[in-house]
Image (tube, rainbow, N blue to C red; front, side, top):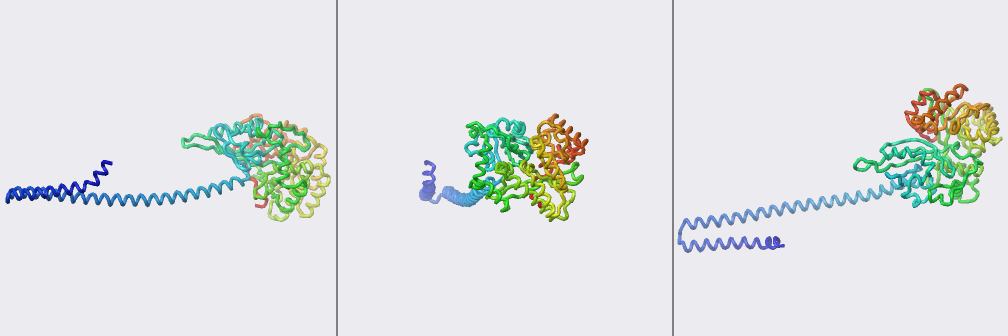
Length: 494
């Protein structure tokens, strides 16, 4: 405050000093009566004082102009930065809304797991997959959400990503309620500014096949009353909820068939590549997806149990066969040696009218039966031995081929297929996934391939996810490989 008062009176003090000096000069001249040395001396002092004040005033004016210019520049810069900040905030808000919209409509499940293994973020697909509300997921450990048994299958992968290792793999996950899912998973570590791992993103796609689902008629144990609080879904409850979402009415069958007729089901295919890669004719497995109202794809793990429960699988299998043959008939340039692998449900295997439908459809579109290869699961073979034998006999009469899928998931026994004429054995992905690190799985794959060659059956490795596994399979002598390490599913015809 004192400095401010001094600046205000400084100009007056300087002016007063100049007046005093001038007065003293005049008085001296008067009293010295023409004493030239004194006059010259005092005149010099007066001139120096005037010049000093003029210089000070000029410098003050220059400083003021410079500060004014700096202030104007700072004001302009501030206004520019404020405008840019507002634009950035607006863009961030728009991008956040857009990203959230995309995030919430993606079929891929997205989960952020922190360094302690707790769930810090999850999208709609993950919530719907677990059939849990957000508040029952937030902050829970991934072990609680999946259940101890299911978590054991990914515990090593979780620790590897927490250690900073990105991973991509496929695996089968059996939930405590008995539901079985085949998941394609990618884990992306999340780093902080110091380069340390803060957690990882868990990205998963449900690629469940029919052979992965519980066998129809198998008794499922009910979950405890507090299962939802532990994050464990009851499969029967899920089917009822999905039934309501799908139809909104009690007559699910008509609604399901209506969805087929309206074209809401889409066919996809996944490459089954010969080994070595590109060394022979490639084949394709047919996959099916359902489009929901928002346009996203519902994975088969969601609607297959519903179709099984309502006795609709034979109808759906007929739709698949008809559309595949119609598409093949309109592709004159396709490789005639390529096969389309089609999974068939247990109800279809036991349907005595299906082979007649198959033959009439082949005749209608003029496609040879050798273009199709029907997959029968190992579980169906064990439980429905006589029905499977009759099904294989009749579809082979139509010229079609047969593959046994999920082979080796349980105890490997070639006695199971004695008397059944199949062209392919699809080695279950549970053995393929860990064959590089598990000597037991590797020995299982080697033994299956060795015996298969002796009986003249081709082998197909499922859930192949990496070039290293591809190389090892080629070294063993496996004939074909299928999985995300080979090719992702794509729309049939694309």
